[in-house]
Image 1 (cartoon, one colour):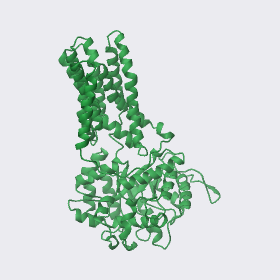
Image 2 (cartoon, one colour):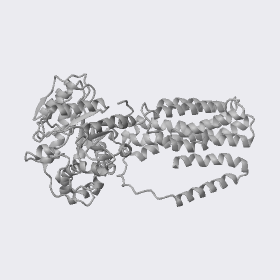
Image 3 (cartoon, helix red, strand yellow):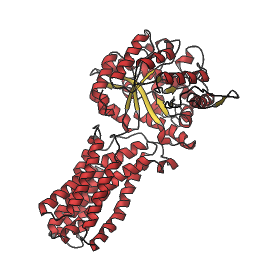
Image 4 (tube, helix red, strand yellow):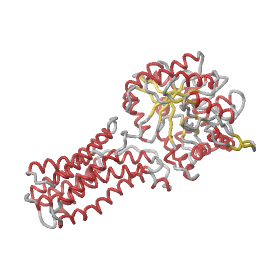
Length: 582
């Protein structure tokens, strides 16, 4: 609405001021528009309060991010050029024989109609082909600017002005949403950057186009130049409509292993890009052999643990296992790794200390990708790693500031085991600050969210099937409370408050539907931490995750109706978000 009003007001002025005449006309118009805006502000319902974000921090990588210049160019060559055209179109049409009132009426359309298409541009982003629409609008707007410079009859000029106005509004939502999504560490600054480029075009372009009125063609050269540059801006549109939320699935390594493999293969068939499994060698079957089987029995889907740990597995063995699996799968392995939960607690040990964890991950990341490392005062290398294979990325799980610091300094991404946008935002801000302090580009840190999802109209049943999940998360939260307390000064209360009613946890029912230790979990927490409901409710939740910068949503496939969940996602959800044919 703000963006639309910014073109509606000058569009009205462009039509009205010449008709009123006199030096008072612009001021009177501005007063009327300001009064109307104030009235809307007074009567409009107040927006719901949202969680306060941590302060944005702009590092050197911000200004080197080519995506910001692409989205800035889209905004500059649509909104920026439409303002430049609006500044001169009345003069151009008057100089070429149109009356002042006709020129003003036609010229106002170059801004006025953008009010409608700016609003329409938001829903357009849900389409998989949104980038094509935006590119087409830039080309169409450029052609309309060229048409305004030709000796068309009045009806043709009015049509050209209308087309330019409509086309100029379409890219607005993509430019701002794309910039903000590209820099989730500083979305406000990213939007401001796009706006600054458009403002620069207006400030520089307006006098330059004015100068062309002293050249042959009496201003036409300037409008042709605008049209050509706007058309070229279509090349800046991304190939996809957005970062493309990808989808994964986590399947427990329960016996029989053939059932586990069947679900992984079904996920691949339905368009899931990642297949994960647990690494808890006593509660379930040993998962390295099952991943090896999956590497040979699938062809496209990426594979890994959600999550493994370097505590129960020697770090060098874990790295070598992944390098071997990467060879078997022709480069399809992804490592999810944490300090250890069920795998270590069930055998009477505690999660790995953070300092040791970071040291182990730094070694594993290089070692499994074939680089020489120094470990236990000895230089070692997996010399058999195939150089032509893609590197194995490392995504680090964590909730607290220290573990998230490790993710930011060492990891390629952060694994977050809950689907609450407020908490996700805090977690990613924390990890990205650590990345920037370590001299890394925080924008390159990916965000993967894992949570149960059950597609149904029966919310009560869905909640009962997922109560085990927040209870599982509470194990990690209890560790955070022991270290940081519950006052919200270090860890947000949105993450800690829900465990107050917790009584116990039984690892024998770890990740099991109906586990008694999940009885304390409220319906509200089920809705916040999980992705449940009918298809439209799930799409709405996933869009909220996408809006805060989530790169992958991973389903914990432990609820009933596993095949139905995979099929519904493949048929109705993945195509809309990922733009692929399941």
